[in-house]
Image (tube, rainbow, N blue to C red):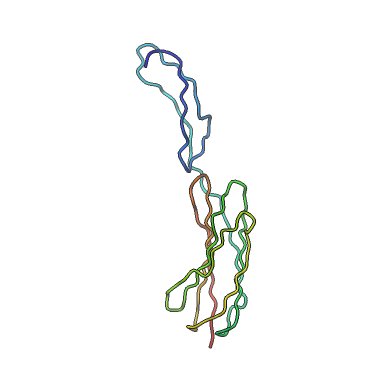
Length: 150
């Protein structure tokens, strides 16, 4: 590059934020063959998220209803909600997705009613909230157990 004044601009990579400006005016003197600029970018940590869950009742007979309720406890304008997923794991360890919701941004809480089925024993429910923060998708979640009886 010939000596002179140059404007240097950089693009922030996905998942990073600028700690300073993204454009600099720098001078290149005669006999210099490089530009020395210190661009300040950082990858922010995702905000702490909380998921509240309620199982009602904690034990139920086959053929009767159990309600699972949830609520996302941290709602911020810089978070882009993706989905909430409810997964049930049977006593034998196999699992299936009971419910997925992507009705955002207003659906931060919900309830799903499920009819208890065989097999009997201890079942697990996992609720996972997927969200994007500065271009990177993260997960937050909680889990609990309930019993299906004959």
